Image 1 (cartoon, helix red, strand yellow):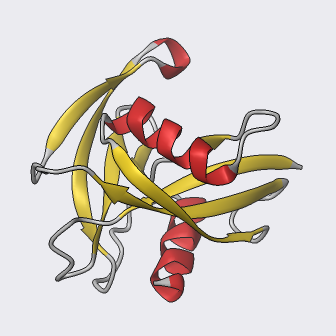
Image 2 (cartoon, helix red, strand yellow; image 1 turned 90 degrees about the vertical axis):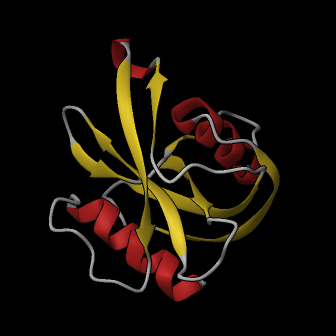
Image 3 (tube, one colour; image 1 turned 60 degrees about the horizontal axis):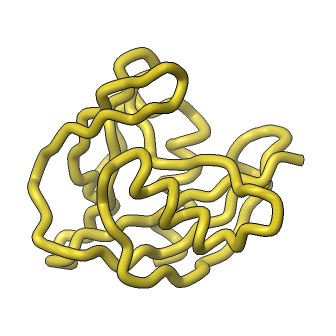
Length: 133
């Protein structure tokens, strides 16, 4: 089973509850996620993946829990990442994964209906986060 870290990057203002999400140029709307390296704690992997994929820095990460119901063959580990400010409303970040992509980030309102363009695993992850917070 693959071990996946999913950072929950909650916006500093807190109301409405918003988390970082992005548009992948080839794969639609997503949340940040990535593999946990051997011996790496899920909280550390979450902070690393968040920085690599979004450029956001984590001051502290708190483990929220895990689920095997997000994506077949994977255990997703969720960690709440306390962000370093200031934060922009929208930004772009070049990620080196898969030969390099430009990700377009925005803040997803957790209590609003999810955009249809989220793939099913990311919809399930967002709903898991909504319940956990």
